[in-house]
Length: 131
Image 1: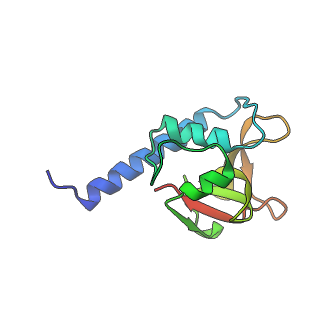
Image 2 (image 1 turned 90 degrees about the vertical axis):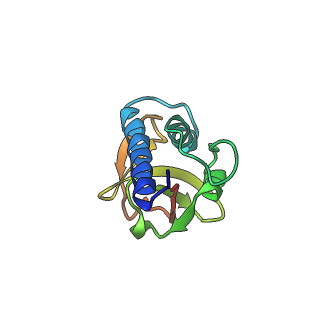
């Protein structure tokens, strides 16, 4: 059976939907982590999103950014892309973009996974595509 572009796109969309659904299912749960990296890595692993290279998704934002399929500007982010705060070479936080200027991340104050809103005071430096 030949692999078609349509087949690859359907697989991509199904994987992206599974990954976002898993993240949304974890809203309101507590995660005792310094940043959202472990939360993001757990969703990627549970959805079995393949890596461009390596054997597992890393919990560190600095390592996650290196595992992206490609980097893009924040305004080009689509649901499922990762958003990174800090600098491209030294990100310190990561979230999952869900669209409409919203993202899922673990809140640093109460360590609960929440949908949060991008703002002028809390705006990522770059986005990364996992597909």
